[in-house]
Amino acid sequence: MTTMADGDGVDRTPSDRPDVCVVGSGPAGSILAHRLATAGHEVVVLEAGRRFEMDERVEQLEAHVRPNGGPIWEMGGERDAFTSSGERHYPLNAARVKGVGGTTLHWQGMVMRLHERDFEMASRHGVGADWPVGYDDLRPYYAAAERELGVAGAADNPYAPPRGEPYPMTAFPPSHSDSIFAAACERLGIDMHSVPNARNSEGYDGRSACVGYGTCKPVCPSGAKYTAERHVEKAEAAGARVVDRVPVQRLEHDDAGESVTAAIYSTPDGDEHRQEADQFVVACGGVETPRLLLLSASPQYPDGLANSSGLVGRYFMDHVFAGMGGRLDRPTRQNHVGFNTSECHQFYDDEEPVNGLKLEFLNYAGPSPVMEALRSKTWGDELLGQLRESYGSHVAMGALVEQLPREENAITLDDSRTDDHGNPVPNVTWSVDSETEAAIERANEIQRRVFEELGVDVEWSVGPAETGPAFHHMGTTRMGTDPAESVVDADLRTHDLSNLWLVGSGVFPTGGAMNPTLTIAALSLRAADALETTL
Image (tube, rainbow, N blue to C red; front, side, top):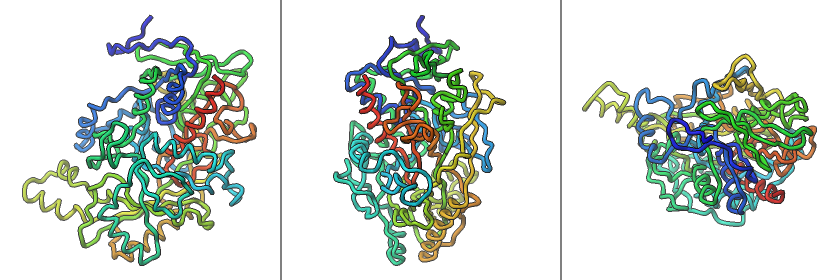
């Protein structure tokens, strides 16, 4: 029987036992699928969400800027239900997307390599855990990932780890407000440098250069910013099959409990199917990957699949935000650029506090004139005067701060609440420890020094009490050499099942303070090489 949904003409019946079944089409899954399909292997990708076509982007942008436009990526409702039971509420649906391309559909697009110290936190500082791979192991894969995503950058960061090749594209120039910050930072001895961005500063890989919509998050109508849709298209061109709107409900394994035999998925019309394959890759992100493993409990794995360590879902980490903003008595031209062009890693490797922190010089402080105009109840000269008064005099700094792994921060199942398929929803237990709070205070201290030097009238600040997550879900299926202390090995194969691989930021033993997508891509490329040796 051919399963068609809502008359869309898509065949959602299982493929005939492919070499690899990938669950999830974000950057982790799509990059791996493309690499394996290009090598001639038969690959099927199962994606829970739908395809969002490029010709929808302008309409989505219009919905975003208008009052009461609603969630443009269709997150929410029974399908995406969750609970949050930790010391701090975790707004899970605020920044994730279920769809072909995953959360890169609306990500900010900043892509940095982790520092060398991030792989050796236990050895160097006696905290967290060491990775089973080091920076040198990932260095060639970082370079490959930069080419795959298309990264615009410059080798002007004296604090970055060593690299032996230029970025694929030249960096975006500093913004006008960057130049304002630069004068104050130079007087204070604070170094600024460019931000590597996965958006085109020139035409690259069939995509145009950035045209300056300024709405990178939540939507890039031009396609200049990378999304994993690009690798989905390449994978399909190489022969892979990508099926949307088929959320996987559970994984089944053989009688011995040594290998996965099928992914059980549902279709929009309510049918359930078994997708068999030789190898299985779960790439659903740091929340849905552990949830799927926990939902796949069996007599051999009563605590969840691949969970003999008891650590599936444990050590949930995020990056937390520290920030400050206010006004200057001169034009700052904020909101002309929808992404960061300058940052500072100068304090990243400090030993006190041990948590890494990365300073950001924001290009989107203060109100957007377009949104202010659309939402205003005034017209004509009165509106123009209001916009002139409110727009273009703001500045702001942010910081990403590392959160060290704590076992009590976790993704578990909430058996008291179910999703649209009757499965327990994910429960996020999340808190911020005193060491992380100290690092946030350190970031605020540096930001305040800069603002005092500039003479900024500080109007808001985000410190330890107000901090929130950056929505980088890490650590819940951590990698390691000891099966009792980790879920996957250095190649991202589970310790418990020989044909089950987990890719994505869930495998990070520690999170550093760098945006994780480039490391996700590098690890996926490395895992693809390891997986291919089994086929």
